[in-house]
Image 1 (cartoon, rainbow, N blue to C red):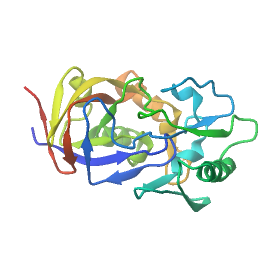
Image 2 (image 1 turned 60 degrees about the vertical axis):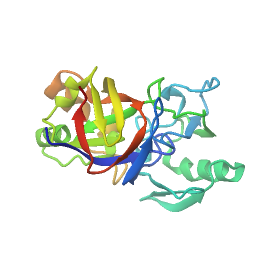
Image 3 (image 1 turned 90 degrees about the vertical axis):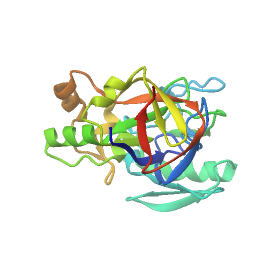
Image 4 (image 1 turned 45 degrees about the vertical axis):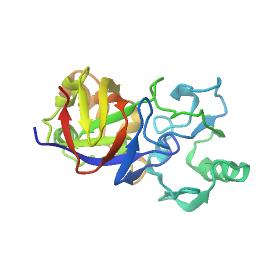
Length: 247
């Protein structure tokens, strides 16, 4: 098949930055380690214990400027950068770190919208799915959609975990119900990823630049892009690994 794992990304704070990884250990039933480990609840959130749906959190669909955040986790502190803000380094598990983060984020929020109120974690990844998922996307599909729009869409706007190379455009949609082996890990593809307005934002600037949802409707007849998978066999993966359909 010639499929390979091209990129690995994680997002320590849901919708608030991303970082590239060269390798990572996957664990059965879990998302990437530290992916969506924290989330920023807004001041209108109705939180329940444990996992909560995305409507309770500040995110790029409502606050486009959040899409321009980048993050780096060094094992004990998280450094966040944004083109319009000074860099911030915090320990997210401390009250001081939480307060500093909320203050740092407020200039990105419009007056009158629900603002950042609390940093939360659930003991599991706060993925958009109610199960711990790994998102898998296709470089060729991104290139095809960009060609339709006459633009280089980049990768960051899609907030993916794993990007595959060598697979035909939109062929990832045919993987639902199939198992993939990547490195020593095995993943089962479960469902498509429905997309929101956050994908319309240029992550270099935090400004809306392309109507990706309309482009997806034209290309596919829906607004899905990429697939969610679950890890069914633990193991390390790294960029460059061969990706194969499991027998």
